[in-house]
Image (cartoon, rainbow, N blue to C red; front, side):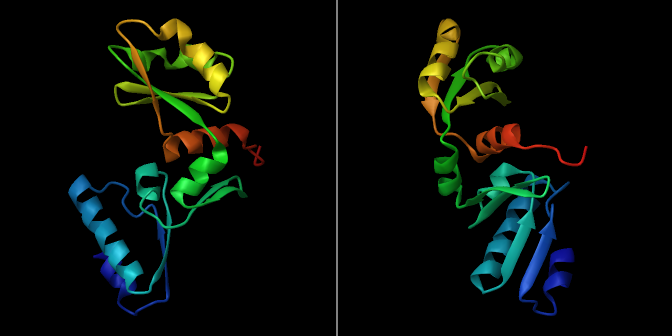
Length: 164
C-alpha cells in the first residue's frame, strides 16, 4: 500500500529506506518484482538495505560506511574489486569454528552462513594454510565465489568509525 501511495504522483525518483524490513518472504519477493517493474518503466529507484541478497537484485550497488564510499558497481564488479578468496566449510558444527578461524593469519573474515562457514581473505595461500588443520573429517572445504555479504564484511574491516 505504501509503495502504491509513493508512486501515485508518478515521481522520477523513488527513495526506499529498508523497504522490506519485517516483511514475510512471499511479500518481499512481490515487493521486489514491483520495484523491478517500476525501474523497467523508467523510474529511478534508490534503495538502502542491509540485506545483501536484496542488494544483489540491484543494478548498481554502493557500499557507504561512516559517510565514505567504499565500493560502487555491479555485484560482479564489486566482488572483482575486493579480490577475496573464499572457502565454504561444511560439516557438523563447522559454523562454531568461526571465532577460532577468524583469528588465524591470512583470514580476514570467518562468517557462518546457516550451517556452513565462509572463510575469506585476499591472500589465497595464507587462507589455504590457515584452513589446513581443519581439512579433516567431519569437515569438507570447497572453494566458492564470495558473496556480497563476504565483500561487505571485508570492506567494513577497513572502515573507520569517524563518529567516535
